[in-house]
Image (cartoon, rainbow, N blue to C red; front, top):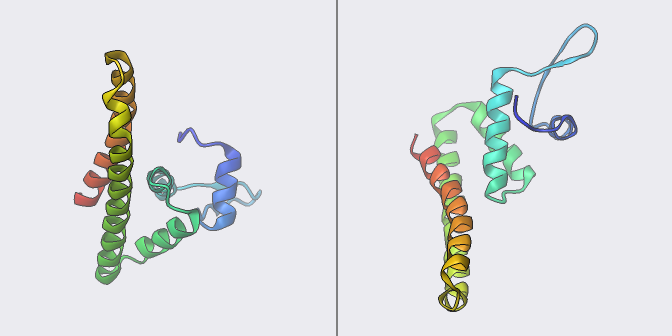
Length: 129
């Protein structure tokens, strides 16, 4: 359902990112919340956040208090801001090189940049919603 390997899910479970229920025969059952957690982990991994920080955010999210929500929002804004700053610095460094490329080369690079822009836009939408 998530296109995430069994091995990765096992690893996330060992780290405490996922908490499956166990059947009598010791099979793990993952809830809808686990699917949401996997999406959240994927989202933060795309932002290059370490798994330990992701785990801390998930623990905070699961506590569901207003103060925690504010802290999560602040942390998320900081992460996005840091990511945007990093992208700005990279673009400044690449600008002279980009100016010397032909049309096809520029198009290929812009396509790759638009993927990063999409990830950033998703982060902003997640933050707003």
